[in-house]
Image 1 (tube, protein in one colour):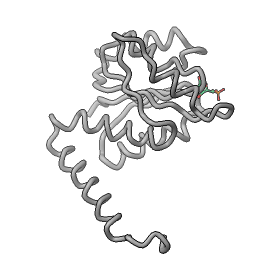
Image 2 (cartoon, helix red, strand yellow):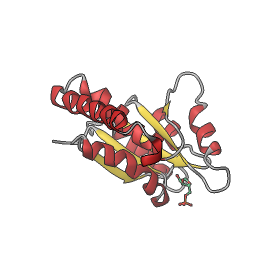
Image 3 (cartoon, rainbow, N blue to C red):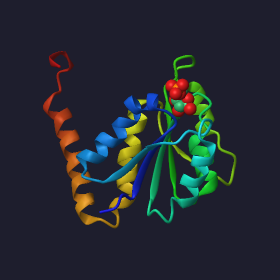
Image 4 (cartoon, rainbow, N blue to C red):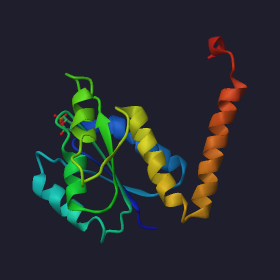
Length: 163
Ligand code: RP5
């Protein structure tokens, strides 16, 4: 089955964060495409990736970047495929710069912005899967099972001192 989700990131250094999105999709058995696309270092590749995203069959793009994080917004400007932006935690400003760069899109070009760092990447994977699940009953079942297991884990471990 060809991938309907693309996970792109600005740098190899974003992978330890963005692997969280990949791990969630692996767990849910959802195929994905993964690739480094830098807004600043490979701007022409960014344009060609975004311009061909629809014909490639992508239905959601997860884009992670840090610092002056233009990647999600620039991809969103060049495609109508929904873009989920993940602010990667930067070393100097701890990802506040990434968050502000991604979340403050001007009216007309939306980017769905997640939390900074690993939680944001994992949630981007979950959100992307949820966006596909309305047309995939098997995926919907796996998502509901994921939720049920998560709930049960908390219920089974009520004493915080034991973990
Ligand atoms: C951004 O610059 C990347 O998304 C990365 O988060 C940040 C730093 O990149 P490297 O200098 O580690 O390659 O474009």
